[in-house]
Image (tube, rainbow, N blue to C red; front, side, top):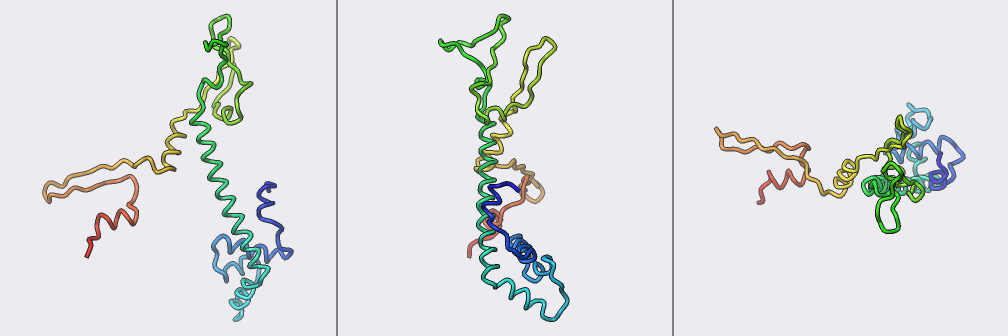
Length: 197
């Protein structure tokens, strides 16, 4: 397990069944089912009572709260990490890998090929390199990842892209039908089909 993740979730409970029960609750499992999934025997008439008694113990409540906080933080970190990587790919350009003269002109070798320089590249810029190889003449060739998919994903994340919408016309009945790439949200459905009053 990653050290950062381990630090965020804290020290597990000594009783492995208690710890498993807490993790089941965090996953959204109902209390009686979490009790069974944690390894406790079921079928008895007092099973539900034991499950709820375990759930209401102070140490169990505290552990569930700690795991919930850690899960929320890790989720936010994961979202931020994905967006930062997409942004790095979208921002990277071939210019990051070329060497320039003091006057700003492109530095070239004896054969007129641009000088490639990885010394000043950040790790984020280097992650945008999709392929790195030598050709038959021994020249270094590299290919950058296409930034357009990364930009599209970022735009979708920010809600800047609208899905394509097609319309069809039923001339016999005088109706226009909209065919979308995604289902309507409840708000869109209400706006289109529910009348006030």
